[in-house]
Structures are given as C-alpha cells and as structure tokens.
Image (cartoon, rainbow, N blue to C red; front, top):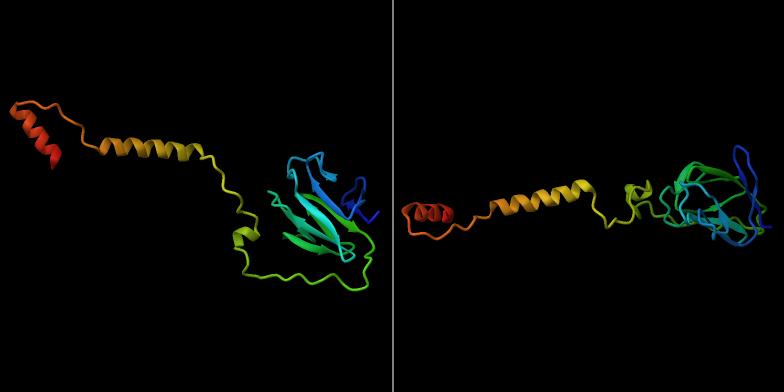
Length: 166
C-alpha cells in the first residue's frame, strides 16, 4: 500500500494500492466515487519521485488542494484533496529524501475564467432561446424580401411593382 485517502468527516479510508490511480464515478476507475457531482473520470493520482501528484482530467466540478482550486499539484502528507465537494486527507510516507520538484506555473498561462473552471468544451447543441432567435431571425429576414406581385396590365399593378422596386 502506497498510502490512503482519509475522508474528512468520517467514512472508510481509501487505500492507494497502485502508483497510478484514476478517480471518478465510473465503476472502471481505480477509485470509484459514485456521486453525481463527480465526473466519470475526475482526476488521477500518480506517485512521482516518491510523492503523490494529482491531475484534474477536465472534470466539471474540479479539484481543490487545501481549499484552493488547482488543476495539478504535488500532494504532501496531510494535505486535503477535494474531489468535487468530497474532501479527503492524504496520508502517506514520502519515499524520497528531497522535497517534491517545483512545478512551474505561469500566472498568465490561463484566463481567470479557466482558473475558476468556468470554461469548458463548447456544446454543439443550442439552447431553446438560441433556436427561437434563429427561427425569429429567419422569419424576419423572409418578411423583408419583396413579395413577387402578379404581373398584370392594370395601372394599379404597375404602381405596386414600381413601389416594390423603390
């Protein structure tokens, strides 16, 4: 065993049995958290250089380390990992003598919306209001087109055709 996740607030400890673990809602994940706010493949834990490293896998509700939203970071013993809103204390003994490698972070590498987890994959479906706007837009475009008038020889028909051309 390489450590364990201890649920904050009680519950059964989750053993970390392999050096690469996927956490998610799917039963095929190494650690299955069957909660609706956990993504099917939420994040992964990898033992690197004797320290656990967590990486978000593009989940909808994200991960937090010690209360701060992050996409990836080395976990120290005693850190709290939040998967969606489920909080676990990380318990293990590092196997390296040196501290974990420093991760380079570019403060300008992501927009504030990305850091807050408010951007994601664009959805291909349009909302009902967008569809209604499109229908209304098409209808108004059609109503602006001049309607063809029957060609007649009467003076009224000639005046109406002349007005349509203007």
